Image 1 (cartoon, rainbow, N blue to C red):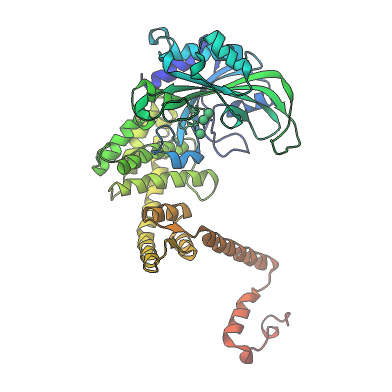
Image 2 (tube, rainbow, N blue to C red):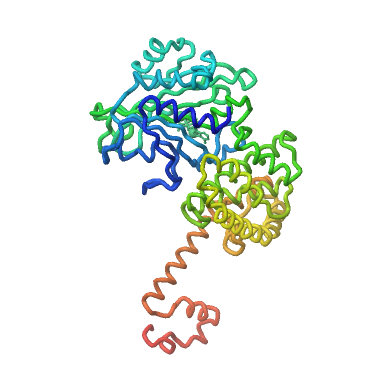
Length: 476
Ligand code: ATP
Ligand code: MG
Ligand code: MG
Ligand code: MG
């Protein structure tokens, strides 16, 4: 089943069951606590917090998401992308567990001919929060999941809260058993690559109050109106329904891998390291296009830095694969073609997206060209000194003079088998910031910068020093 069809079925299943279809919000969160949208519930947060009244008690969406904390997993696990689409159904004080659970099961297991995803129920495992007897009873007695495929898990994976006073509650997750070729048996509690997590159902039923202690904010009691918030990863379901090994081999990402392969002459499947790079390129180029599409531009802070870091990693991985010249135009084009069907605004914005991406690539290639020799020299010197740690002052020089972000130095050093004295680097950065602040202060006060005179004085030695009074007339 194609990704576009998975999405259509999702929306239509819930629409037929009384949910209002809500289009994906921008990746730029309308929320000062978030840089980017990491989950489908974000646009609905004001309803859950009671800050706004929902126009409809039930909603369904397929939301664009970016999770930067997952960046290191990309290409290494089979199921983490920096960009993905979260299918969600939501109830604002309307139905609760007794309806959300059977609905999820129906959609997952009903035959394809009847509008479902047609998954084999014997491959599905369910986890519940260890104290949530109610959810366990519904899975077991209403849905009929056998006890041996039901597992209880603790707070970490199966209890949801926002880290602030407000709604919270237990979760229940549906996992798919991909079979023994993905490792040992034992259920999702022991093997999350074999029993891949597909769908998280959050039951917001309690309220946390102020006064956080060790256990977080204390639970005050039941919410007056209980809510449902669910999230299913579209790419993960596509991976199962398309019978491929990982999310990067699904229809919308595989074409990007193939383009990267054409551009570098490296065949996907030829080796583990090159495969990881190809998957990183596919993921990161798609994320970059989606971010630029929503108006993010590369920069050194906040969202701009997220984009810069992700795009530069894509370009660097292309070079590790052997690309020498620019590659971004062609990669952007395939992403636009595959994602444009579901997000037509990408096509109307094509020119702008290409311009931003190409400019960033050009700037980065220039940086790389200038800094790589300096970097290589630093590596040679470090090794010659018998050390495995690239000194902090070298990382600082690369940053300050050659425009190498520290992440780039860290990654290149790791590839060369070295670590970096990050503490030393951060100290030098801090000193530089303090110097800049002091300069700015001095300028603001309208005084000359005395430290410059002092330096001259120190260099010249005391005997020739004729005193500040001669030069600025007010210091000693
Ligand atoms: P995992 O444990 O696999 O990292 P998660 O528990 O962090 O997933 P949730 O926060 O529960 O994920 O998000 C709901 C759903 O969104 C997941 O069940 C999964 O299908 C999907 N999802 C989460 N993170 C990613 C990601 N980085 N790439 C693709 N899909 C994801
Ligand atoms: Mg996760
Ligand atoms: Mg999880
Ligand atoms: Mg989860």
